[in-house]
Image 1 (cartoon, one colour):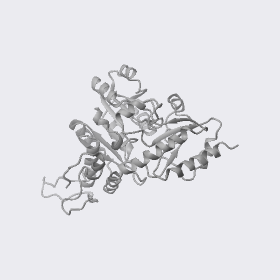
Image 2: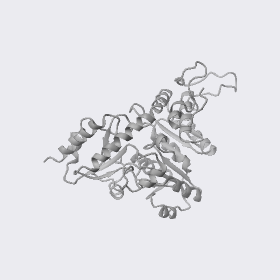
Image 3: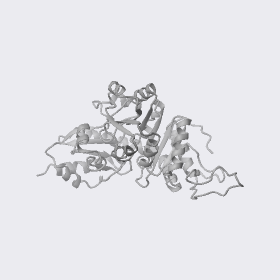
Image 4: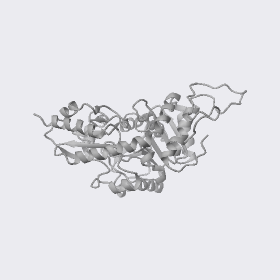
Length: 388
């Protein structure tokens, strides 16, 4: 229904993909809550046969995320892990995938505990060391899988450089873009082949749905993912597709506030005597700052930090009132977590220590509350952490 007479992503968030309903003029795509579709005659249908294979509400979401990420086609799944599982299903026994030295714990777990059983291997590498990475690509390596910023240390990897290395070796480049979203960063525009999202996070934005999205940069990859999606069946349901489209409409205004708050909180933490280290890509002295500036709009709204060794981290978590101790991120409410025992607990202790995910690391997803009240809550908890 939309004439597509726009150029800015803020407008595309609202009018992109399949906009509205041609039949009624409704400005929102209806929820097609159906499992099957009556066929016109034997061998002839309207384009829809069964909702695992295709559903108009899900189709509208898939078209939207493909447009926002500058891809050729998009795919919606029942969770971020279902999306990751579908992408990893592109590979076969004997293939190896290089992953960044800090990625989401669920990504590591599915590779280490599930796909390894089928002969798909992985190696953990420092993807910021481009020269070293290039030398690690042996004949069995079929993909480079990264996050930038990476979870939970906010490590920045050069997207264009990764895409170039992958093309040189004729392998796939895969980026989990959950932390940045297409509003702040579009990896396909830097040559990346596949983009993933846990849409549960910023894209949904309200901590009320579970979803995963995949976008690809060419028709052949799209056909392969479409086959996997239909064959394995981990699809997103119509109502959640509708909710996700609704969430994406406000992504721009939400993220502007998320980032504005995050930058003020980072300034507070950096200048606090009880804070040992802050991990945030928007800090000028943060490793990868210049690379992030080149490929992303700003530093985003995720950050991690460590308190001084003499502070009691348990008292810090117990002292929070406004900020919730919880898994996940990207909702309108501020959430804090302890990666070592929560999001990254599935990664073995020695690997966590090696890559820097210490027992004292705290990850903060900055919400859109009044920033002074978030800071006051953090300040109260830090004071309690320092009490004997």
